[in-house]
Length: 291
Image (cartoon, rainbow, N blue to C red; front, side, top):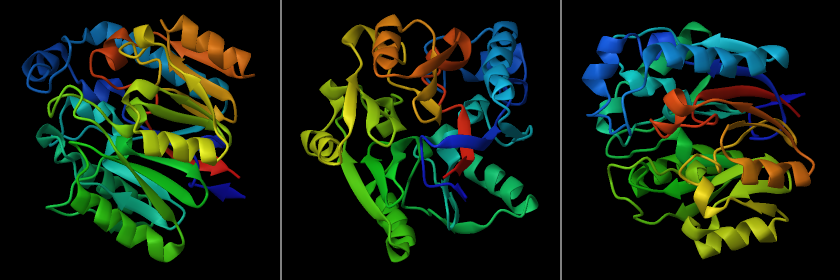
């Protein structure tokens, strides 16, 4: 049996936006990185090397990879392909981006889904905004969504209207201002479920009510230390229960994962992850998992 209602079951197929189709060239990076609020300009050749190593993890695990192609209407941020859509068992939900420079990404993804005959459940429309990095499946009947500068209450209302008639409970996490409107701060900046009862979290920025919801659902919480939050220690992609991918350079979080019985695969992400604020969950749009 296959499902889309999971962040942690065995990954069967995933969409990626290859770095060469998103970053395109040194010239495109030079023209876009500042306006999109990257920490620095990624090096194009180093980005290719990092991305090849990242993709090799999926190849070794025999996960089917699909690619979003080059599209001239989108910018370098399109490499973080989780954000433009949400996978559900009832069809894809097409998002509406809260970051202005990414406004064309959902339509570009929708075109690919239609071409591949994927079912579309619905779309988030203006004035609603919703980004995929702000949602995470906690279990097959529960989706968490962050109220952030990227995802507004109207977007959440539309999300609930699509999912609640199908028996899905939508839990809202009210996230803090933190660094403000221009920063990349999604729900999955502070939460990565990696098994039915295990999640990586950064509690200092987690709402008390939402954190208690996780504990009430039986989650054990792996607490990312302060020193590893900015280096994306909390952004962990599960490719199977307690089998996960993370950005290298977070040894304390890695040790905590291993102590909890997890297998950990690392990739160097200085160019493709840290500079743009997008770890392995952001770089992927998981489609099918094995229930």
